[in-house]
Image (cartoon, rainbow, N blue to C red):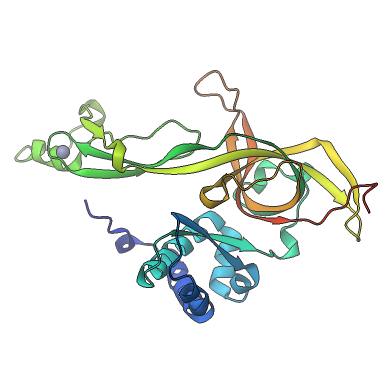
Length: 287
Ligand SMILES: [Zn+2]
């Protein structure tokens, strides 16, 4: 099955794609051109939040559905990279967020999930980098049709239940009107194509809320107000333990890492980080 995604896009998503396209063409042509000859697999493309704010469509959607908006931005930027002959895959790193996104760890609640937040923190425990299966690719063992399924991190892997092509073939010439489909159990017959599945590097860390004065002197680093975060791709391996940073990302709801039964309903908030900016904090005693 060809990846013909844009065909059934909602009008909102078409607007987002078009707004990104115009914004990159208006603001980033020279910067993209300057990256020609860039090496590596993935590149963090820093984008000032002011550019998003100056576009009414992007500004609205980045605020209301940031993960989706950034995904479309990455898609458009990838096309721009390919057209310019740049090999690494880009990731958009939105920097210099508007101060309205600044929150404190202790005030985050479940209702804030999927929101953009900016946290001033000290970075603590950093896990070893690992990978996860972001998009699984399956092949029907009968008709060889290939199916792509986007996965969710830290959740059970989704696999296809039925091959439409084979199902339609099985039903050819059979009167299906009124047939109770819930009584019909086609056996899934797929294999996962491990080698061409899409994987992503990630790294987890914890961060603690800090407070500081107008001259960036540290007042307090909380031992209670802590939240975990996840960085991906080009940011993996770049975190510095014990450093102070402004961490920007989208709040997500995760299952408890210690869950020991499958349908545990307890959830934790964590941050899908899209950019990190160092904070020049001075601890007491430093000059
Ligand atoms: Zn099939």
